[in-house]
Image 1 (cartoon, rainbow, N blue to C red):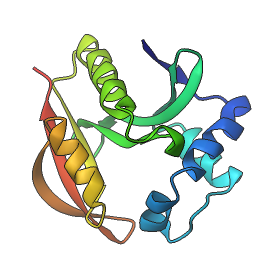
Image 2: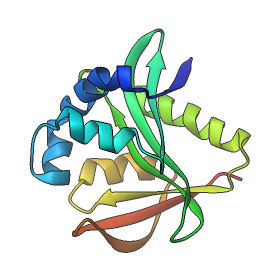
Image 3: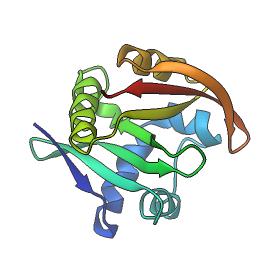
Image 4: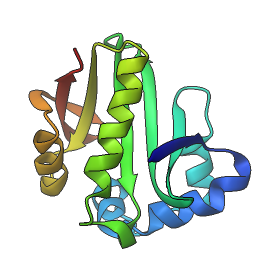
Length: 153
């Protein structure tokens, strides 16, 4: 069973390890294979989003960064959903997202959105396989992103 544990300061070393295990994503997102502890602190310990480490059988396997209400569209957004590089292609991503989606449904969210870097072909394939549908192209920090949405009703 997957658990979503709120990220705290003392977990940042684990968070950094998970982020830096995904060098291909980091290169796509910001042109650097690795993030610093300070970058991870800013990303996951802020007042805007709820950030969780994904736990399976007492193993830290991934991260979720979630924005309950985006002020631009009053809709919940997944800012980041990442599985540790050592755990790719084992089905953890699909099972973890399904568990996270169940939590969103319990909180009565009607839909959820995600923005995917246009160059991230594997992420687009993954999220469409999870039932997300493309609805628009936008920009994020100067990069084109494709916006996807899923109804939770």
